[in-house]
Each structure stands twice: as structure tokens, then as C-alpha cells.
Amino acid sequence: MKPRKSTYLLHRWIGLIVSLQLLAWSIGGFTFSILHIENVRGERDIAAPPYETLDHPTLQSLPEPLRNALRALPEGEHNFGTITLADRGAGPAWEIRDRDHALIARLHPLTARPLPNLSRDQAQHIAQRDFIGSPEALSTTLIESDPPTEYRAKPLPAYRVELDHDKRPHIYLDARTGEITARRNRTWRIFDFFWMLHTMDYQGRDDFNHWLLTAFSILAILTAASGLTLWLWRAKSRRKRKRNTAPTPS
Image 1 (cartoon, rainbow, N blue to C red):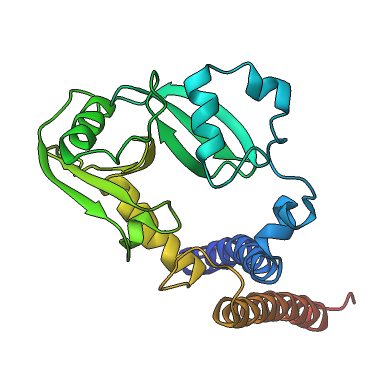
Image 2: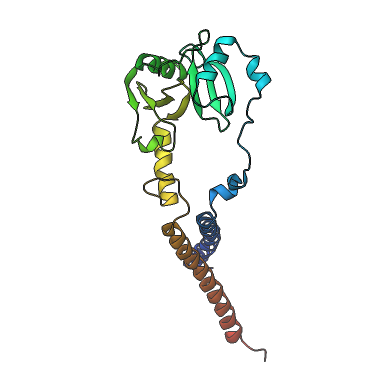
């Protein structure tokens, strides 16, 4: 067999294998674009909130200052889902959340008086403690609206603490509780950029269900499928020509 012909055959077979995978990727992209993630996760079928409302005996068993503080809250005693004593790095506090786990109030552990949002120094301390080696903080920024893309769909207000490290980490934390809500670094940003290219959602970056992705998925499926069809047609034609040109026995 001539080297040129063997190279051509190798190219054809590699092209066939790659085309099959491209077709699978394209069909997957089309499927993602038409299936809403809320349905996939079953979130649209949820009938109950994450937590049941705390009953009266449970509330009565709490310390008296805390019970008095709960009565003073505008939500009353009918929407408390969790009451947690937590220390997230700025000292212990009662975290009162509703049945959907949204924060209602953060109270002093002894007096049950409302606590203010975290200071920049507290946020910086928590972020440094969260990252290995506790590097120095380059900046600490309070974000109350218009969060950056890397902090999309996360709770506000929040602190962003930029740390002095080769990975260029940004630690985000809830300004009300000190809970770490996101960790971003150079690797995450590279991944997010290519994720944007994959989803073709150049603004929100996480939306699969838009016409641009659906249209390009259909085009990719047609391209891969037509390429496979041509490959099979040419292979069939070649076999037919070989049969027609084969010498007949004398």
C-alpha cells in the first residue's frame, strides 16, 4: 500500500471517529438548550419549603432574651424555619432564618439584640482565615448592588476580599453573617471564560435555554450528520466501483 493512500485512509477513519463524538456533543448541546434546568433538577415540582415552621413548644424552650427578641421581629412566630447559634469568624450570634432559609435577623448571643453588619476588618479577617497560609489582603470592598460577573446570582450585601497570592483569589462573604458565599481565583476565571463559550451566554454565562445555542446546535448536528452521510456514501461508491472493475474469470 502506498504511503499516500495509507495516510488518506487513516485521515478518513480518524475523521469518522471524531465526527461521531462531535455529533454526540452537538446533540447534547441541543438537548441542554431545550431542557430547562429547573425541570431537570425537579425544582418546579417542589411543594414545600426547605424547612418546617418551628412550633410553639420549640420556641418556648429558647432563652428568654431570645424569645422576647423573636416576638419583636415583624415576621412574628409563624415563619421561623431555623434558629442557629453560629460563629463564622466574627464571634457567635443567633442566626434567624425563615422556612426558605433566607436570613431574617442576626442577634447577640446573650442579649439577643440585633447585630450590625460586619465591618471591613472583620470581613478581611474571615477571608484571610479561610485561605491557606492567611495571605495579606490587598483590598476589601463592600458590594451592595451590581455585583461583578464572577459573583453572579449570590446574596447581597457582600464583601469581596482580594488576597495577595499568585492565584489572585477573591473571597466573597455575606456582609450580614460572615458566611463565605464564593471563592474565585485565576483558574476559576479561565474555566468561566470557556464555560461562557460553551453555553454561548455572553452575559449571564449560565443560561442554556436561548435561541443562539439551539440554532448552533442544530447547525452542528446537520454538519456532523451530513459529513457522516457523505463518508458512508463515498465508501459505498468506492466498493461498488471496485466490484465493477474487478476482472471477470476466464
